[in-house]
Image (cartoon, rainbow over all chains, first blue to last red; front, side, top):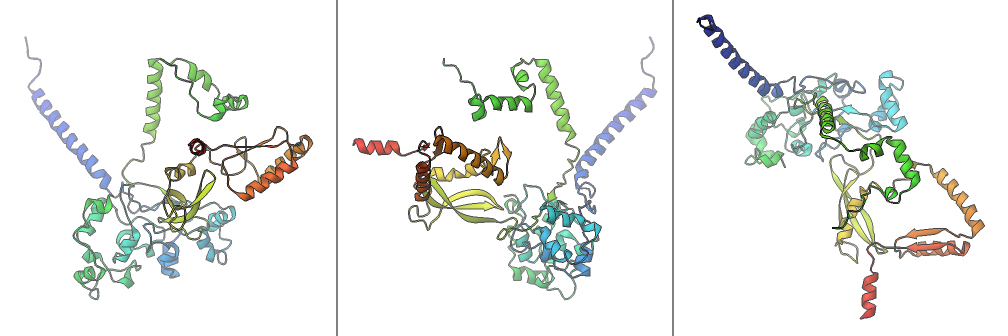
Length: 217
Length: 223
Protein backbone atom coordinates (compact mmCIF):
# COMPACT_ATOMS: atom_id res chain seq x y z
CA UNK A 1 0.00 0.00 0.00
CA UNK A 2 1.42 3.43 -1.04
CA UNK A 3 1.76 6.36 1.37
CA UNK A 4 -1.23 8.70 1.68
CA UNK A 5 0.78 11.93 1.60
CA UNK A 6 3.49 12.69 -0.89
CA UNK A 7 6.77 14.25 0.32
CA UNK A 8 5.65 17.74 -0.84
CA UNK A 9 2.84 17.62 1.74
CA UNK A 10 5.43 18.25 4.49
CA UNK A 11 6.24 21.61 2.88
CA UNK A 12 2.60 22.66 2.51
CA UNK A 13 1.79 21.63 6.07
CA UNK A 14 4.67 23.75 7.44
CA UNK A 15 3.71 26.69 5.24
CA UNK A 16 0.07 26.53 6.40
CA UNK A 17 1.10 26.45 10.04
CA UNK A 18 3.45 29.40 9.51
CA UNK A 19 0.73 31.37 7.72
CA UNK A 20 -1.76 30.65 10.49
CA UNK A 21 0.74 31.87 13.09
CA UNK A 22 1.42 35.03 11.06
CA UNK A 23 -2.31 35.66 10.63
CA UNK A 24 -2.85 35.32 14.38
CA UNK A 25 -0.06 37.83 15.07
CA UNK A 26 -1.33 40.24 12.42
CA UNK A 27 -4.89 40.00 13.72
CA UNK A 28 -3.75 40.68 17.28
CA UNK A 29 -1.74 43.69 16.12
CA UNK A 30 -4.73 45.15 14.28
CA UNK A 31 -7.03 44.64 17.26
CA UNK A 32 -4.41 46.13 19.58
CA UNK A 33 -3.39 49.11 17.49
CA UNK A 34 -6.63 50.02 15.71
CA UNK A 35 -8.29 51.87 18.62
CA UNK A 36 -5.18 54.03 19.01
CA UNK A 37 -4.98 54.95 15.35
CA UNK A 38 -5.73 58.51 14.31
CA UNK A 39 -8.48 57.17 12.06
CA UNK A 40 -10.31 55.40 14.86
CA UNK A 41 -9.81 58.40 17.16
CA UNK A 42 -11.16 60.66 14.38
CA UNK A 43 -8.10 62.90 14.59
CA UNK A 44 -8.01 65.56 11.83
CA UNK A 45 -11.60 64.84 10.89
CA UNK A 46 -14.04 67.74 10.76
CA UNK A 47 -17.61 66.43 10.98
CA UNK A 48 -20.35 68.30 9.14
CA UNK A 49 -21.95 70.88 11.43
CA UNK A 50 -25.34 72.58 11.12
CA UNK A 51 -23.44 75.78 10.27
CA UNK A 52 -19.89 75.61 8.85
CA UNK A 53 -18.57 77.79 11.65
CA UNK A 54 -15.02 79.08 11.10
CA UNK A 55 -12.89 79.68 14.19
CA UNK A 56 -10.27 81.10 11.83
CA UNK A 57 -12.61 83.88 10.72
CA UNK A 58 -14.05 84.67 14.14
CA UNK A 59 -10.92 84.31 16.29
CA UNK A 60 -8.00 85.20 14.02
CA UNK A 61 -9.93 87.48 11.70
CA UNK A 62 -12.20 89.35 14.11
CA UNK A 63 -10.27 88.83 17.32
CA UNK A 64 -13.12 87.39 19.37
CA UNK A 65 -11.82 85.82 22.58
CA UNK A 66 -12.41 82.09 23.23
CA UNK A 67 -14.36 83.00 26.37
CA UNK A 68 -16.91 85.12 24.53
CA UNK A 69 -18.57 81.90 23.36
CA UNK A 70 -17.09 79.27 25.68
CA UNK A 71 -18.01 81.42 28.63
CA UNK A 72 -17.85 78.96 31.52
CA UNK A 73 -14.38 77.58 30.74
CA UNK A 74 -12.80 79.37 33.72
CA UNK A 75 -15.40 78.41 36.31
CA UNK A 76 -16.86 75.06 35.30
CA UNK A 77 -15.86 71.59 34.21
CA UNK A 78 -17.80 72.35 31.05
CA UNK A 79 -16.37 75.00 28.73
CA UNK A 80 -19.86 75.84 27.52
CA UNK A 81 -21.25 76.33 24.06
CA UNK A 82 -22.68 79.67 22.94
CA UNK A 83 -26.46 79.92 23.06
CA UNK A 84 -28.07 80.89 19.77
CA UNK A 85 -28.64 84.29 21.33
CA UNK A 86 -24.85 84.86 21.51
CA UNK A 87 -24.49 84.22 17.76
CA UNK A 88 -27.36 86.59 17.06
CA UNK A 89 -25.69 89.38 19.04
CA UNK A 90 -23.77 90.14 15.87
CA UNK A 91 -25.71 88.23 13.26
CA UNK A 92 -28.90 90.14 13.87
CA UNK A 93 -26.89 93.09 12.49
CA UNK A 94 -24.45 91.62 9.97
CA UNK A 95 -24.94 88.86 7.37
CA UNK A 96 -28.61 88.92 8.29
CA UNK A 97 -29.62 87.33 4.98
CA UNK A 98 -26.77 84.84 4.59
CA UNK A 99 -28.16 81.45 3.58
CA UNK A 100 -25.43 79.72 5.59
CA UNK A 101 -26.77 81.27 8.77
CA UNK A 102 -30.37 80.20 8.20
CA UNK A 103 -30.15 77.43 10.84
CA UNK A 104 -29.07 80.02 13.45
CA UNK A 105 -31.93 82.37 12.60
CA UNK A 106 -34.41 79.49 12.57
CA UNK A 107 -33.13 78.35 15.94
CA UNK A 108 -33.93 81.71 17.51
CA UNK A 109 -37.20 82.05 15.64
CA UNK A 110 -38.52 78.57 16.47
CA UNK A 111 -36.85 78.37 19.89
CA UNK A 112 -35.15 75.12 18.87
CA UNK A 113 -31.50 74.69 19.90
CA UNK A 114 -28.73 74.19 17.37
CA UNK A 115 -27.34 70.65 17.52
CA UNK A 116 -23.58 70.68 17.02
CA UNK A 117 -21.54 67.53 16.59
CA UNK A 118 -18.96 66.94 19.26
CA UNK A 119 -15.30 67.12 18.25
CA UNK A 120 -13.48 66.56 21.53
CA UNK A 121 -14.89 64.13 24.03
CA UNK A 122 -13.67 61.81 26.73
CA UNK A 123 -15.59 58.73 27.87
CA UNK A 124 -18.08 59.10 30.71
CA UNK A 125 -15.74 57.30 33.12
CA UNK A 126 -13.19 60.08 32.75
CA UNK A 127 -13.54 63.16 34.92
CA UNK A 128 -12.31 66.25 33.13
CA UNK A 129 -12.55 69.82 34.40
CA UNK A 130 -11.72 72.72 32.09
CA UNK A 131 -11.48 75.31 34.86
CA UNK A 132 -8.64 73.68 36.79
CA UNK A 133 -6.54 73.26 33.65
CA UNK A 134 -7.01 76.92 32.75
CA UNK A 135 -6.26 77.97 36.33
CA UNK A 136 -3.03 75.95 36.39
CA UNK A 137 -1.56 77.30 33.16
CA UNK A 138 -2.65 74.75 30.54
CA UNK A 139 -3.71 76.59 27.40
CA UNK A 140 -6.58 75.70 25.06
CA UNK A 141 -4.27 74.62 22.27
CA UNK A 142 -2.51 72.02 24.43
CA UNK A 143 -5.51 69.75 23.90
CA UNK A 144 -7.52 71.43 21.12
CA UNK A 145 -4.67 72.43 18.79
CA UNK A 146 -4.44 75.70 16.92
CA UNK A 147 -8.18 76.28 16.82
CA UNK A 148 -7.72 79.92 15.80
CA UNK A 149 -6.47 78.82 12.39
CA UNK A 150 -9.11 76.14 11.75
CA UNK A 151 -11.49 77.06 8.93
CA UNK A 152 -13.57 74.06 9.94
CA UNK A 153 -13.10 72.79 13.46
CA UNK A 154 -11.38 69.43 13.65
CA UNK A 155 -9.93 67.28 16.37
CA UNK A 156 -6.22 68.01 16.56
CA UNK A 157 -5.10 65.66 19.35
CA UNK A 158 -5.90 62.01 20.00
CA UNK A 159 -7.22 62.68 23.56
CA UNK A 160 -6.36 59.10 24.51
CA UNK A 161 -5.36 58.19 28.06
CA UNK A 162 -1.76 58.13 26.84
CA UNK A 163 -2.18 61.72 25.67
CA UNK A 164 -3.44 62.83 29.09
CA UNK A 165 -0.73 60.91 30.95
CA UNK A 166 2.07 62.35 28.81
CA UNK A 167 1.30 65.72 30.33
CA UNK A 168 0.23 64.60 33.81
CA UNK A 169 3.59 62.83 34.19
CA UNK A 170 5.57 65.90 33.15
CA UNK A 171 3.37 69.02 33.10
CA UNK A 172 6.14 71.66 33.41
CA UNK A 173 7.09 72.12 29.73
CA UNK A 174 3.40 72.39 28.71
CA UNK A 175 2.54 75.19 31.13
CA UNK A 176 2.45 78.73 29.83
CA UNK A 177 2.25 82.22 31.31
CA UNK A 178 -1.23 83.47 32.24
CA UNK A 179 -1.47 85.89 29.31
CA UNK A 180 -0.81 83.12 26.75
CA UNK A 181 -3.55 80.68 27.85
CA UNK A 182 -5.97 81.70 25.09
CA UNK A 183 -3.30 82.15 22.42
CA UNK A 184 -3.69 79.00 20.37
CA UNK A 185 -0.51 79.69 18.35
CA UNK A 186 1.70 79.80 21.44
CA UNK A 187 4.80 77.65 21.55
CA UNK A 188 7.54 77.57 24.15
CA UNK A 189 10.35 80.02 23.24
CA UNK A 190 13.33 81.75 24.82
CA UNK A 191 11.17 84.27 26.69
CA UNK A 192 9.01 81.59 28.35
CA UNK A 193 9.84 81.12 32.03
CA UNK A 194 11.48 77.82 32.93
CA UNK A 195 9.14 74.85 33.57
CA UNK A 196 10.18 74.75 37.23
CA UNK A 197 9.27 78.43 37.66
CA UNK A 198 5.83 77.94 36.09
CA UNK A 199 5.17 74.83 38.18
CA UNK A 200 6.01 76.81 41.31
CA UNK A 201 4.02 79.86 40.20
CA UNK A 202 0.85 77.86 39.53
CA UNK A 203 1.42 75.55 42.50
CA UNK A 204 0.93 72.40 40.44
CA UNK A 205 0.86 69.40 42.81
CA UNK A 206 3.08 66.91 41.04
CA UNK A 207 2.99 64.11 43.57
CA UNK A 208 -0.54 62.86 42.74
CA UNK A 209 -1.20 63.96 39.16
CA UNK A 210 -1.04 60.37 37.93
CA UNK A 211 -3.23 58.87 40.67
CA UNK A 212 -6.10 56.86 39.17
CA UNK A 213 -8.64 58.86 41.14
CA UNK A 214 -7.50 62.16 39.64
CA UNK A 215 -9.35 61.31 36.44
CA UNK A 216 -11.39 58.20 37.33
CA UNK A 217 -13.54 59.30 40.24
CA UNK B 1 -51.36 29.30 49.66
CA UNK B 2 -53.01 32.63 48.81
CA UNK B 3 -53.41 33.40 45.15
CA UNK B 4 -51.27 36.22 43.76
CA UNK B 5 -53.50 39.15 42.91
CA UNK B 6 -53.71 40.23 39.29
CA UNK B 7 -50.93 42.73 38.63
CA UNK B 8 -51.55 46.14 37.12
CA UNK B 9 -49.42 48.82 35.49
CA UNK B 10 -51.61 51.88 35.83
CA UNK B 11 -54.53 53.11 37.85
CA UNK B 12 -56.72 53.09 34.74
CA UNK B 13 -55.94 49.44 34.13
CA UNK B 14 -56.69 48.63 37.78
CA UNK B 15 -60.02 50.38 37.49
CA UNK B 16 -60.74 48.50 34.22
CA UNK B 17 -61.57 51.84 32.61
CA UNK B 18 -63.21 50.75 29.34
CA UNK B 19 -62.08 53.88 27.47
CA UNK B 20 -58.51 53.32 28.57
CA UNK B 21 -58.54 49.64 27.61
CA UNK B 22 -59.87 50.65 24.21
CA UNK B 23 -57.00 53.13 23.77
CA UNK B 24 -54.45 50.44 24.71
CA UNK B 25 -55.95 48.12 22.14
CA UNK B 26 -55.71 50.88 19.49
CA UNK B 27 -52.12 51.70 20.46
CA UNK B 28 -50.89 48.08 20.52
CA UNK B 29 -53.20 45.98 18.36
CA UNK B 30 -52.82 42.32 19.15
CA UNK B 31 -51.08 42.96 22.49
CA UNK B 32 -53.73 41.17 24.51
CA UNK B 33 -53.61 38.15 22.20
CA UNK B 34 -49.80 38.06 22.29
CA UNK B 35 -49.70 38.28 26.08
CA UNK B 36 -52.22 35.53 26.60
CA UNK B 37 -50.89 33.13 23.94
CA UNK B 38 -48.50 30.47 25.29
CA UNK B 39 -45.01 30.73 23.84
CA UNK B 40 -42.84 27.75 23.04
CA UNK B 41 -39.07 27.31 23.07
CA UNK B 42 -38.73 27.57 19.31
CA UNK B 43 -40.54 30.91 19.15
CA UNK B 44 -38.51 32.27 22.07
CA UNK B 45 -35.24 31.36 20.31
CA UNK B 46 -36.44 33.01 17.10
CA UNK B 47 -37.25 36.21 18.96
CA UNK B 48 -33.90 36.11 20.78
CA UNK B 49 -32.03 35.74 17.49
CA UNK B 50 -33.93 38.66 16.03
CA UNK B 51 -33.15 40.79 19.09
CA UNK B 52 -29.45 39.91 18.85
CA UNK B 53 -29.36 40.78 15.16
CA UNK B 54 -30.93 44.15 15.92
CA UNK B 55 -28.46 44.78 18.75
CA UNK B 56 -25.55 43.87 16.46
CA UNK B 57 -26.68 46.40 13.88
CA UNK B 58 -26.12 49.14 16.45
CA UNK B 59 -22.49 48.21 17.07
CA UNK B 60 -21.03 49.61 13.85
CA UNK B 61 -19.78 52.82 15.47
CA UNK B 62 -18.02 50.96 18.27
CA UNK B 63 -14.38 51.93 17.74
CA UNK B 64 -13.51 53.59 21.04
CA UNK B 65 -14.00 57.20 19.96
CA UNK B 66 -17.15 58.54 21.58
CA UNK B 67 -19.27 60.75 19.40
CA UNK B 68 -22.08 62.90 20.64
CA UNK B 69 -23.81 66.19 20.28
CA UNK B 70 -23.51 69.57 21.91
CA UNK B 71 -26.86 71.26 22.33
CA UNK B 72 -26.54 74.78 23.69
CA UNK B 73 -29.58 76.70 24.87
CA UNK B 74 -31.28 79.10 22.51
CA UNK B 75 -31.33 81.68 25.29
CA UNK B 76 -29.09 80.93 28.25
CA UNK B 77 -31.26 80.92 31.38
CA UNK B 78 -29.83 83.40 33.90
CA UNK B 79 -27.74 81.89 36.67
CA UNK B 80 -27.16 78.55 34.92
CA UNK B 81 -23.51 77.68 34.33
CA UNK B 82 -23.11 74.57 32.14
CA UNK B 83 -21.55 71.73 34.10
CA UNK B 84 -22.12 73.31 37.52
CA UNK B 85 -24.71 72.43 40.12
CA UNK B 86 -26.74 75.14 41.82
CA UNK B 87 -29.40 75.51 44.51
CA UNK B 88 -32.88 76.90 44.73
CA UNK B 89 -35.26 77.37 47.62
CA UNK B 90 -38.39 75.31 47.72
CA UNK B 91 -41.01 74.23 50.22
CA UNK B 92 -42.03 70.72 51.18
CA UNK B 93 -45.62 70.30 52.31
CA UNK B 94 -46.28 67.51 54.78
CA UNK B 95 -49.69 67.13 56.39
CA UNK B 96 -50.60 70.62 55.28
CA UNK B 97 -47.56 72.26 56.86
CA UNK B 98 -44.83 73.61 54.62
CA UNK B 99 -41.17 73.56 55.60
CA UNK B 100 -38.50 75.35 53.63
CA UNK B 101 -36.08 73.20 51.68
CA UNK B 102 -33.07 73.84 49.50
CA UNK B 103 -32.91 71.76 46.32
CA UNK B 104 -29.59 71.10 44.64
CA UNK B 105 -29.99 70.87 40.89
CA UNK B 106 -27.67 70.12 38.03
CA UNK B 107 -28.54 72.35 35.09
CA UNK B 108 -32.20 72.35 36.10
CA UNK B 109 -32.40 68.69 37.14
CA UNK B 110 -32.94 68.27 40.90
CA UNK B 111 -30.48 65.87 42.54
CA UNK B 112 -30.83 66.44 46.31
CA UNK B 113 -33.32 67.88 48.78
CA UNK B 114 -32.08 69.32 52.05
CA UNK B 115 -33.71 71.45 54.71
CA UNK B 116 -33.33 75.20 54.64
CA UNK B 117 -31.18 76.14 57.65
CA UNK B 118 -33.01 79.47 57.91
CA UNK B 119 -36.40 77.80 58.42
CA UNK B 120 -37.29 78.15 62.13
CA UNK B 121 -39.21 74.86 62.30
CA UNK B 122 -36.59 72.60 60.74
CA UNK B 123 -33.31 74.52 61.15
CA UNK B 124 -32.05 72.67 58.07
CA UNK B 125 -33.31 69.20 58.96
CA UNK B 126 -35.60 67.15 56.72
CA UNK B 127 -37.87 64.16 57.22
CA UNK B 128 -37.34 61.02 55.14
CA UNK B 129 -40.46 61.96 53.22
CA UNK B 130 -38.99 65.35 52.33
CA UNK B 131 -35.82 63.58 51.18
CA UNK B 132 -37.92 61.28 49.00
CA UNK B 133 -39.54 64.35 47.41
CA UNK B 134 -36.73 64.01 44.86
CA UNK B 135 -38.52 61.00 43.36
CA UNK B 136 -41.60 63.16 42.89
CA UNK B 137 -39.70 65.44 40.52
CA UNK B 138 -39.16 62.51 38.16
CA UNK B 139 -42.56 60.88 38.63
CA UNK B 140 -44.00 60.17 35.15
CA UNK B 141 -47.41 60.98 36.65
CA UNK B 142 -46.25 64.41 37.74
CA UNK B 143 -48.38 67.10 36.18
CA UNK B 144 -46.44 69.10 33.61
CA UNK B 145 -49.21 71.20 32.10
CA UNK B 146 -52.81 71.17 31.07
CA UNK B 147 -53.75 67.78 29.63
CA UNK B 148 -56.91 66.04 28.59
CA UNK B 149 -56.83 62.32 27.79
CA UNK B 150 -53.02 62.57 28.20
CA UNK B 151 -52.75 65.07 25.35
CA UNK B 152 -51.53 68.62 25.95
CA UNK B 153 -54.18 71.30 25.80
CA UNK B 154 -53.99 75.07 25.82
CA UNK B 155 -54.97 77.24 28.73
CA UNK B 156 -57.84 78.60 26.66
CA UNK B 157 -59.17 75.05 26.26
CA UNK B 158 -59.02 74.62 30.05
CA UNK B 159 -60.95 77.84 30.61
CA UNK B 160 -63.54 76.81 28.05
CA UNK B 161 -63.97 73.39 29.68
CA UNK B 162 -64.27 75.03 33.10
CA UNK B 163 -66.87 77.49 31.79
CA UNK B 164 -68.96 74.57 30.51
CA UNK B 165 -68.67 72.90 33.91
CA UNK B 166 -69.62 76.12 35.63
CA UNK B 167 -72.89 76.35 33.70
CA UNK B 168 -73.64 72.73 34.56
CA UNK B 169 -72.81 73.28 38.24
CA UNK B 170 -75.01 76.35 38.46
CA UNK B 171 -77.95 74.30 37.17
CA UNK B 172 -77.52 71.49 39.73
CA UNK B 173 -76.20 73.55 42.63
CA UNK B 174 -72.98 71.52 42.60
CA UNK B 175 -74.59 68.11 43.16
CA UNK B 176 -72.22 65.26 42.28
CA UNK B 177 -69.23 67.58 42.24
CA UNK B 178 -66.38 66.91 44.61
CA UNK B 179 -63.00 68.56 45.17
CA UNK B 180 -60.17 66.30 46.28
CA UNK B 181 -57.22 67.75 48.19
CA UNK B 182 -54.58 66.71 50.63
CA UNK B 183 -54.45 68.22 54.08
CA UNK B 184 -54.12 71.98 53.86
CA UNK B 185 -53.48 74.78 56.32
CA UNK B 186 -53.74 77.50 53.71
CA UNK B 187 -56.19 80.25 54.69
CA UNK B 188 -56.39 81.32 51.05
CA UNK B 189 -57.46 77.87 49.89
CA UNK B 190 -59.91 77.62 52.79
CA UNK B 191 -61.46 80.96 51.85
CA UNK B 192 -61.73 79.90 48.19
CA UNK B 193 -63.37 76.60 49.13
CA UNK B 194 -65.75 78.44 51.45
CA UNK B 195 -66.69 80.81 48.62
CA UNK B 196 -67.31 77.80 46.35
CA UNK B 197 -69.46 76.16 48.99
CA UNK B 198 -71.51 79.33 49.33
CA UNK B 199 -72.03 79.54 45.56
CA UNK B 200 -72.87 75.84 45.10
CA UNK B 201 -74.52 74.41 48.18
CA UNK B 202 -74.34 70.73 47.10
CA UNK B 203 -70.57 70.71 46.51
CA UNK B 204 -68.41 68.29 48.50
CA UNK B 205 -64.83 68.76 49.65
CA UNK B 206 -62.94 65.54 50.39
CA UNK B 207 -59.44 65.55 51.80
CA UNK B 208 -57.13 62.69 52.47
CA UNK B 209 -53.50 62.44 53.53
CA UNK B 210 -51.71 59.16 52.76
CA UNK B 211 -49.39 59.60 55.73
CA UNK B 212 -51.57 61.63 58.05
CA UNK B 213 -51.33 62.26 61.77
CA UNK B 214 -54.90 61.20 62.61
CA UNK B 215 -53.72 58.14 64.49
CA UNK B 216 -51.36 60.27 66.57
CA UNK B 217 -54.28 62.56 67.35
CA UNK B 218 -56.56 59.63 68.24
CA UNK B 219 -53.86 58.13 70.42
CA UNK B 220 -53.37 61.36 72.32
CA UNK B 221 -57.10 61.72 72.80
CA UNK B 222 -57.43 58.21 74.24
CA UNK B 223 -54.65 58.73 76.78
